[in-house]
Image (cartoon, rainbow over all chains, first blue to last red):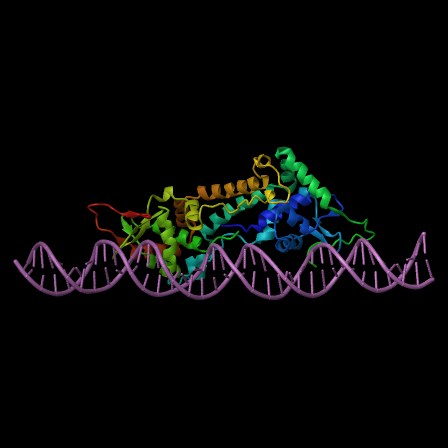
Length: 177
Length: 177
DNA sequence: GCGATAATACTCGGATACTTCGTGTCCGAGTAAAGAAGG
DNA sequence: CCTTCTTTACTCGGACACGAAGTATCCGAGTATTATCGC
């Protein structure tokens, strides 16, 4: 029961990308600098978000990442599942069947009650994460945070965002091909 | 976001111990046999439960484990925390402060909104686990499961439980000393 | 035959290797931009 | 001066080491049982 620390970085980056202009991007190196992280390692997680169609990436100079859809339609659950994988935390190994007494398979059609209870708790966890939209995170930050941090964040975004040329053919590479 | 597989074994063992008589114990080797697990490894997890005061252990021949308190007062959360540790799954590294721009510490007195959202979800997870009492797990098993599995489980318990001598001085070793 | 004593076997507990997953890093493919050359 | 082409530099993407945690195992400390010996 432990989440990788890449989750924190992924959420922070997504929140920062929510502040960039609609047709602009921000490079992974800039975000790594903003949070004092290793650029090479952050790319790995950003790539996971891109593969999950949460971010879109643009290669080349003045390229970078952007949100693949509006912050209203991105939840913390999306990000967590993209980074940590979609598998449930509790994996029932059906050890109730591994004993020496061999019963017929028809005796185990009913699902394991322990597994059901654990999955029910995990559904509650995911439901809470699904209710937390990225736009809410940003809005709360804008309302509650210290004005200095808000100003610093906005200045950083303004300074590092790279506006994209008005693309004649808007073929933004989204996700893994 | 992945739980160790020892959690499953711990819960199954606790549920089985809920079926043994009040003043009887069951050895770890018997439970390992019941679920087809390595006895040496299962002991490790049972030891964790003992350290958390969930189980009580009795050494020597005809010794073993028992519940330290009634199954009504044991929840799945107790077991999960005993095996996986009490640390939250999401650990906020405060990367928002690790950037190059050094702001005064007073700018970060407000807690990180991302951390708050993640912890809120985890509280929901733990609350759901805290509502699942071990007695409920056993009761559901007795009501819903196949009669053959119930009979097999009861027979196994009846065959392997070791009644303790009526102790003149009931000094059952509970937890780590 | 009964009691005390010593040996025994079984139990849990902690210390010790091995494997897997997460962490961290590097190099290569691709692309837009900038600069030079030609018209 | 404008257009075109070449070069350049910057970006993301995947492949490659390192380390920590979980997994699996073995050996030692402790105790109730059991057998033996003496009374």
